[in-house]
Length: 345
Image 1 (tube, rainbow, N blue to C red):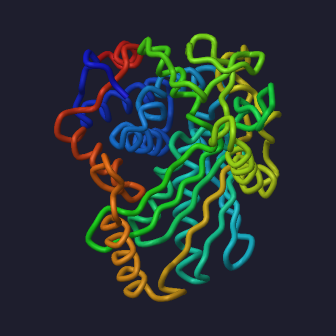
Image 2: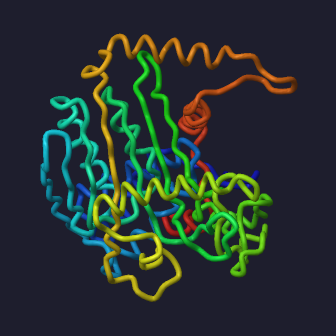
């Protein structure tokens, strides 16, 4: 998201600045590299709400003690196809990428690798981890639950988090098929980005503290579930899927029991966030070659589907992201004013 006046910066410069800030805040090299990788992914594919703008927040949490600066990850293999990763209260990106690595190793033998993560923290864009598995040839699902900021369908109070669901699959000779979606109308970080940019929100996605619809980002206190006023029950139920896998299956923290990510006075107590990653090896099902041929044919058929009047084309999940990435790699990444200031750009 950008305005005509939003400055653009090369990804290499942003990577350098983000890494430097996290290093100054005391983050270990392994954990800051993971965080930088995930944030740059988000910024490059257009998920600005979860991109480099989060650097300041993570640095504040490292300084306040909520985040362990030098976490030592622990892996507990529970069965042939399941494991748990303890993130040691460090940057969530570090634990999440580790979960993908563990899931891949399990899937190579068992066909599937299901990995729960405990004692973690905010991981940014879940699609970064689904993509990490797909880039190595595996179908990958990643999810997390977050602190309450989304009303239930017909509800007037926060209940679920924005609870993303991300899926990615390898495509021979092409970028992966990629779906990364919040189960809310938009992520709360996008509301904060609207505040920073001074932009009004679209109708039907946010509400004030009483549950009344609102478009002014400065008074939006909660989000509405995906599907809006008529079909929001679908988004609310999907948010529960993220909670099921990330919190209930891992024994971590329910959405309503989290210390808030923003706005609270406590920045020293770890939040014990849970994540969940599922990795599937196509070789252990139809076979990698046939799967590759099938998804190639599927995507060809999808993109060749008839287009309604007034539309240019149909797109597969990920098509928009890869186009945005190509543009931003060439022209630069837009960065909001608050982040420009913090990174010293």
